[in-house]
Image (tube, rainbow, N blue to C red; front, side, top):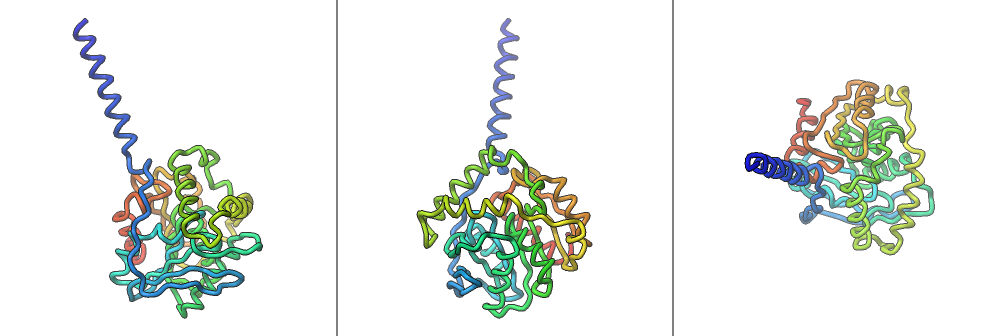
Length: 284
């Protein structure tokens, strides 16, 4: 009987250890947005029918980082600290996000892409490497199709090209739900319309319901070098969808980020930055 009790205790101890390890897995956590360094320059660019917040750091070959839906440029704090050592880093808050304004014009990826093209023109930048996360990655793919002359290459993490590339149960995921709450709190602190988060979410959700909707034929016309990255525990985007994208975009390279989720740039900044540098150097 004593042996059975000891074995039972050992089993429960092992189960508790496994449970604790799982709860501590970095892909299940949402680290806080990092502190931001002081920019070389920042401002509100008059872009299309909005004012778009931007900031520049460092110097060298330019890299434009584009955040995901509901977020803001501050998600890139770790990447800015790394890449500003040897590059000109540009970040911005997309239309309606963070410090940027929005209009009554319906959200659409083509419109948001045109905002970033106009920002590059405003900053007098001819070509950039574009690193995009989630909606930012979708914007990168859109720009590769519509304005390839603006791009050296695209690194798109957790992007989708059709709505069925998104997991149906994403809103039930605790980490993703935590992100939505954090994004709401940051919106209240940063936005020129701090009480309108719900209205903003409703406006952008109308876009997510039907966009993007690109075909294999659309993707086959991309001539810009593209790297597609996805966390092996992504809560939102399907791995097989990303694999399909890699097959349809000529020459695209696929990188699966180990022990990371939709929020890989926060969970594993060193690995994330190495992935970007490998893509830029052609080592991927």
